[in-house]
Length: 353
Ligand code: NAD
Ligand code: DAU
Image 1 (cartoon, rainbow, N blue to C red):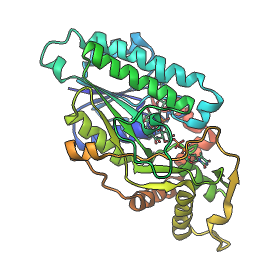
Image 2 (cartoon, rainbow, N blue to C red):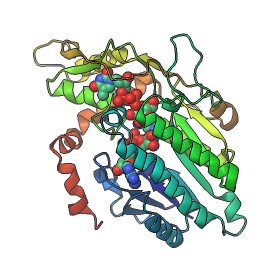
Image 3 (cartoon, rainbow, N blue to C red):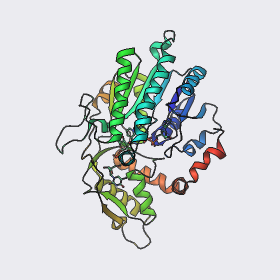
Image 4 (cartoon, rainbow, N blue to C red):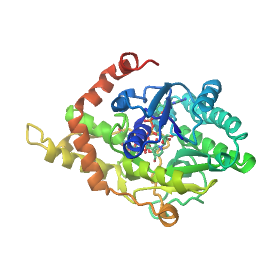
């Protein structure tokens, strides 16, 4: 038995692969294109792990995916691979259409060909788990109830529209072909290996580098935050016991304005790595031009996952954020290799890909 993880060199995927192999011995095949967001150094500790195989490739490469499926015969595929940054989708949506929509379609086709002739009970027990986002539901007013699994899809950015399209394809492959799919829609993650273009790692990096901490617009936009390892535990629960064809919202029950998040980060840094001049990192906060089409509020109702599968997050925002800041303080080389670009050399020096 094995599982195939796509996008396993990215932020959430690498946390998932590391946690999976730390908790059991079922092998993992990681397929990752190593875009700018893929960092194989995240998986450095698995370089000699007998239960891990890394494959450099594209989910949209049907021939490659078909050969991997035939060779390794995985019992499940977990699709983390995506273009994931909203700002990049605004300035260059093409890659988002290509990977998130066309790539997911090609992946589904390769999986369907592999799965369809499988003998029972393997066919029945097979799972395709698609990792998606709360952004597909659009934006909420301040007092509106949180998104449930039956909230309408109203994506507002090229990123969320491309994720919504991929969710629809996954749903259609269940409805039309019977493929045993599961979809998770999660809120904002944070934690180790978070690429420093996203709010939390960017603020930690800029604070320590003495740079401005950019806050888009008025900073009153609200996100629900979940520690990445809790997202990974939710995915493991859904993979184990989720109902084929069902979707599950995943969230931290932790709504914060962006300004609150940045203030919390400044306080932690003031405590753990005070500035030499004795001033607070808050003095580096800088309000900048807003993101076009910026969604005002996301909130997730994850009660289905709690009720049906017994999942709850282990971390609060406070405990998770502290762990995150400590991780970044203890791993300065991880960020500086990204900022300098040397993380790209890992591919050549550490793997035959
Ligand atoms: P990420 O950008 O950090 O990682 C994406 C990974 O996918 C990278 O390793 C990249 O190299 C790889 N990849 C991109 N295109 C590929 C392709 N065509 N073929 C193979 N690999 C490819 O993203 P993330 O934050 O880890 O997000 C993972 C998934 O979770 C995404 O689907 C995202 O939409 C979803 N999600 C993210 C969050 C969040 O807060 N980060 C929240 C909810 C859902
Ligand atoms: O909600 C889940 C989504 O969360 C995922 O699907 C996406 O893949 C992930 O990137 C994330 O999207 P966001 O746009 O919410 O994340 P980001 O870190 O880019 O921004 C978080 C909020 O902070 C958002 O309201 C924009 C704001 N922001 C962001 C940056 C990078 C700033 O104010 N300043 C910044 O410099």
